Image (cartoon, rainbow, N blue to C red; front, side):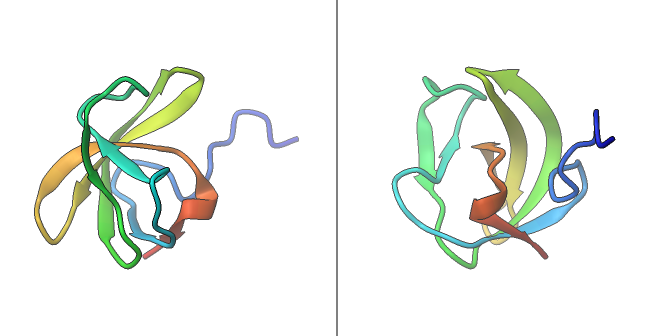
Length: 85
């Protein structure tokens, strides 16, 4: 009954706040597990979804902008890591 519906948190134009920190929460240069890590995201960082999803390595990847620094990169779609702003 919910077939084809994406997560309401993840769509271009939405704003999110990082909820957790750790080595798993990486901002990557490319939408891939092999993409270079640009930085590790920390709790409280505000992100804006710019584009996506790109499906690579069996994950949905979203291009985001870190609002404070205007740095762009790709993150994996994982609802437990983010909250709606």
